[in-house]
Length: 466
Image: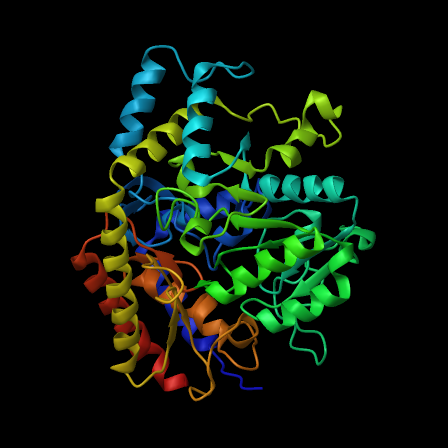
């Protein structure tokens, strides 16, 4: 295993960052008096302290110290028009001014109109709204188990489907021999649940065939992202998804496409349509919400019908207090409608910006003699992508194809990609987490050029250690 000691560099970068952001540092100290580690979402609490954001517009943030930060994190990739897009905020402001938006707990016309747009653009026969991607994936698995009467759940190693019991296995790669993605990611999760989770491989159709031959008639569902998110930012191949569709149909297994990231990111609707695949169920969130907390489970009427009265509510996907919240659905309806109306303009532009960014990333590190493998796009699978992620393999001759390649600490420099670069970019006024990000309609070629310069600066700081 290759090891590199970044201790001194991290200390230096931490001092430089603290000097630039003393107000964020002070506020972080106060936050730690009341919240665990100073916040309520672990990923955001980057060391030595996260920037405390006071304002956000388009591609830019402003922290408590008045520093402007160029942002490629963009709300966990939820923002496709940039932060606080006027097309959404103006509608919400008008609604609040007129006394609409916080009347929680009722049904209204807006739910019908939002559901209609959603179903038309995703091919779903029915939809039920909820508040997070985690809940959407959990409910989709519950529906699958009830519908099939089976217990086993299959997911891919490296796939993230939220912090819910069936998903908290096989996310990070365990370097111990024979372990791989077979690790449990959290204490407190019943082993009786995780023992029923089968881990498969992403973009490995032959392995999928072998596992369905072994488990197929016991599998309630196979949940998979058509665009693998935090596990590597790479699209599924056509062969892989088509194989998944064929095998799930053959064995009576529910195919769930997790499109919490992919939905409305590659087209004004579901990503599965770009593969010619209609799943049994699909989960959505992020982009469709227009910046507000909304998620959805859509799919076959006979499966989703299990939550209804006719099925005596066999699955208690009853909704929470804030499910189908009017302000959230207004944002979702507004955003989805806008994306549909401007589809021909938005998605080619995002694809162009994504291609430029991936090229700039590769060149920035190459100029400093550092090899980087950039994922985010496969032209044979998807027509264009606004996503990118950087990986730093120890041996550049080894092909990077699957999650176990770039998530393996024996094969790739994870501390560099998942920590050192984040802090270095912060010093240079760029915000990103774990070396992956997304483009929005608010970004410009000049922004990408600035990102490239920040990467070059970071590469020069890192190079003496490599």
